[in-house]
Length: 252
Image (cartoon, rainbow, N blue to C red; front, side, top):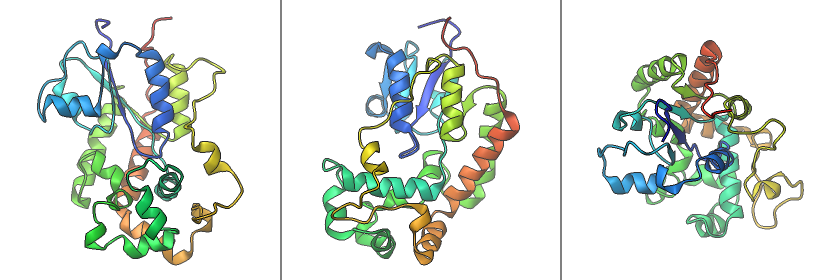
């Protein structure tokens, strides 16, 4: 542990370059004894302090975990257009046979129209929860009247250098400026990215992309994710206003 260096908290927003950003951090924070993922955090207990020797917390943790730390902390997370993120998540589940939802999607959700038709069915609430305001829930926002206070708190942390966000490109630029990703080094990509980018149609499902969504499907997804749309817009606007200088977290 370096005295005075903040703990880095990577909030992994699914399908917003979370795996890529995580690979960059793990190539730097390479001592497992100084890292905690969300599984290890959960084992500590809901309100247990994060051990002071921990330098890096990552994975599917929630905003607010910094309150359990004795050291300062810097959150890093990328934001992505909600429709693009949902389409990517849909494709990813179809392309990963080991995903816990894969078989259900293969059997029942071959298109985004099928997803919309099932999204409010009580029997599928757990399976399809990720397609309804997932990002805002990571930050503890479950109602519209809680949005403003959360965004104000995030912007204040941004202005103080304790929260880094923006588009995926913005976060990549910060990783380079902060010394985590060397100049000219490629951003890591998840293994399934090539399959997602391939132009050939998939044999057993309809690849989703925002520009090809039927108008009614697009409208339904926007309605089901209205809180996420407002949240992502708010975080990106706050990032543009604050533009904090990237701290040099790694010694030259």
